[in-house]
Image 1 (spheres, rainbow, N blue to C red):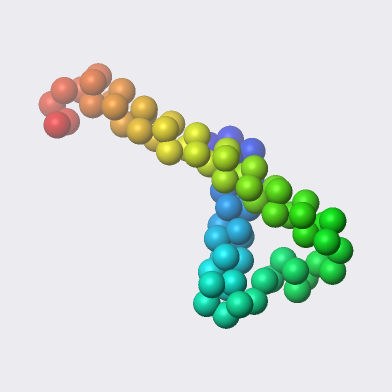
Image 2 (cartoon, rainbow, N blue to C red; image 1 turned 180 degrees about the vertical axis):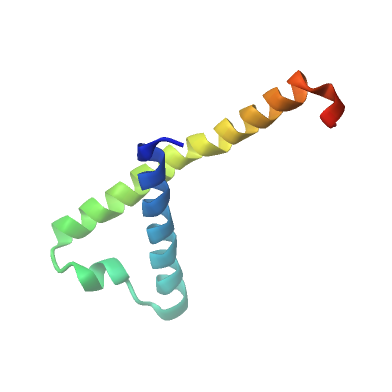
Length: 76
């Protein structure tokens, strides 16, 4: 896993925790930590971009699994 993917994964986890706080307690941690609406938009945009990067991880893992079973048919 590359450094960019690791950073994207951390940002996605932070975003998921923030959405969990919003859903459970109606508390937006990003808005509470950062007063500037422009900075809040930047954080939300980075989390969204991180989510798009992580979509690639889903397909990367699936392709790696398919290749390993094709290379070694006895693992079915």
